[in-house]
Image 1: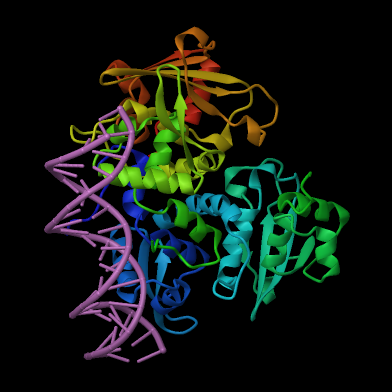
Image 2: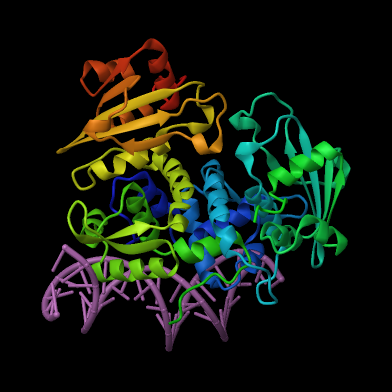
Length: 233
Length: 233
DNA sequence: CCGCATCCGTTTCGATACTG
DNA sequence: CAGTATCGAAACGGATGCGG
């Protein structure tokens, strides 16, 4: 089996030997949200040949990016989950997403916004290095077509920004929903329109595209984190 | 011309539409160090077909990652240089390199350490988020086979770590070499051996693989930034 | 249905040879 | 030096089949 390989002594080349093939990083992207089964991945990876998904998954198992495991809850089935090494690709995916935002444009009928892509998109849109001090819990209730995505972005309490207390974005179940300093209602597209400068926050609010609720301080922090203020013309 | 394209409304997928093909990110890696001409790239990208390099470069020009320009200094020739959008890939390359380090192993005869890869490698090896306070100028004088690579890693003076004052690693010309707090002599392989835990800093020093010179504080900071202390067993 | 495997036409890649 | 041209090999995309 002659697998293609960059024959260079270089960490980037070594990384691309493992994740450089077509679809591999998009599989990681999906598994970063949650473990998924084969057919979930198939649905998400439109345009990928079914056999190719099977090939990639075994390659990724060989490269120790992914494990296939059997779970009983909520119903018995096999799922693919990231290993520690696979999760180590999260920073790569976030930086790729940041690079890709200016190329994104707006959703269309053929390429609609999908609810599964909201969590990673929110993380990538947030500008972590310039976090304001203090604790901030944001709750996003975004209506994506048929699905309501509820997510909490939380910066843990703490004086200094340690690497382990990075902001996290996670789905929130109803029963353990944290107290929120800000609630964002609307849609991902609304956030994108504002970021692109197509409309500003007030206009979006008036048109019902995006509404923010919370204390003045928390709203300021949110606008800062997500760049929701009108860019200087 | 049916170009392959992930048909998804997703910033990561959009990014991979532009940089996901084979060799593209390795070209960016090389151009991040300095503009290069066609034949420089050919030498660096061993194993790449020459026609494919030409194809990639025009694709990358179309995608506004690269521009071809004519320069007169030091001698008249055409070079390829990154655009702003191309340089925006630097964080992606750094994260990929960080992911790839554990897969790197040690240089061999077929895959030797190349001097051109030292600067990006040093940046990726450095652990930026945990920078100690204060100013620190490190000078690396690394002997890679036939070439002596001299580089300065400098953290600008300043109280807080602002995103614009990230640590930079740049080649240092003799005439504008800054004062250094630490001088590291040896080779990249020496650094890697220490990081892999194969030998410790003292042993490397005794065997002439790596030597550090500088004040006690600066040495402590350096060992911290580059993880040169023996990992807890 | 779910989780693949097989087949086949098309696209991309790698190696080498060749040109202005 | 800076690319083109050519061609066989590998990878990909799409459809279809098939056992559990």
